[in-house]
Amino acid sequence: MAAASMPRLPARPDVGLYIELSAGSDMQGKFSKICAKGGSAFDCYLVTPEPEKPVAAIVLASAIHGVDADMRAIADELAASGFIVAVPDLFWRSIAGPLSRRDPRAAQRAQPRPEQIRAGEDDLIDTLRHLGTLPQFNGQAAVMGFCYGGPYAILGPKRLGYAAGICCHGSQMLDYLHELVGVREQVCLIWGDDDDRAPVEVLEAYRNLAASMENVEVHIFPRVRHGYMMRGSPSFDRATHDFSIKRTREMLEGLKSAVR
Image (cartoon, rainbow, N blue to C red):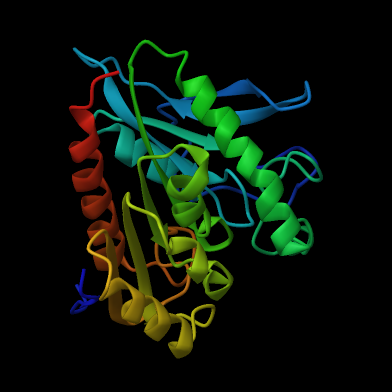
C-alpha cells in the first residue's frame, strides 16, 4: 500500500518515586500469571470483556517503562470496544514491573536490545497460548508495539502466530525492515516526523517498502514526537493517539468475525 502522510490531527514497592497519575487509579482488568517457556511465570495485565460471541484479542508490547499506567490506559481503551487485551511484562527476566521515566534501570533492562527482543518473542508466544484458553477468544490476535516493543508488530505476524501488527513510535526499526519481506498479514506503522528515535532514513525506508506491499501501511504525522501515545509523556499528542486507536480498532474489527 502506498505510504500515507497524514495531516496533524503503579509502581512496584521498590520504585518509591514513581506515582502513576496519568491513567488514574481505576483499572478495568487484572494481573494474571502466564506460564512461560521453561517452567517460570510472568505477570500480564489482562482485560477480558464478556461478549455475546468470541472476539479477537490484542497483545500490547510495551516501551521500556513496562506495564505502567499509560499502557494499562491504552489496554482499557481498546477493551472498551469489546476486544480482549493482554499486556505481558516483557522484562520479568531481569527487573520486573513498571519503572518510572526517571529510573535509569528502564533503559538498562532493555539491553542488549537484539537479545532482549528475541527473548520476548517467547513471551508473545506464551501470551497467545494463554489467550487460547479463554472462552471469549476467537483465535485471532493482533500485536501492538510501542517504542521498544515496536519490532513485535512485524515479528508477531512474521513468525509468532499473530494475525496483524500495529507499531506506534517504534524504535530501532531499521534493524527489522528486512523481516517484513514475506509477511502477508496486515501491518500498520505510525510515527511522527519529529520522532528522534525514527530519523528520516527510517521513515523513508518504510515508506518505500510500503509502496510495494499492499498489506503494509505507513502513517507519518507532522510535528509529532516520540512517545505520542503515552498520556504521562510530555510528547503525548491527542490527535495522533486517537488516530492510532481508531486504526487499531478497525484492524481488530477485521479479525472479529474469524471462526475459532
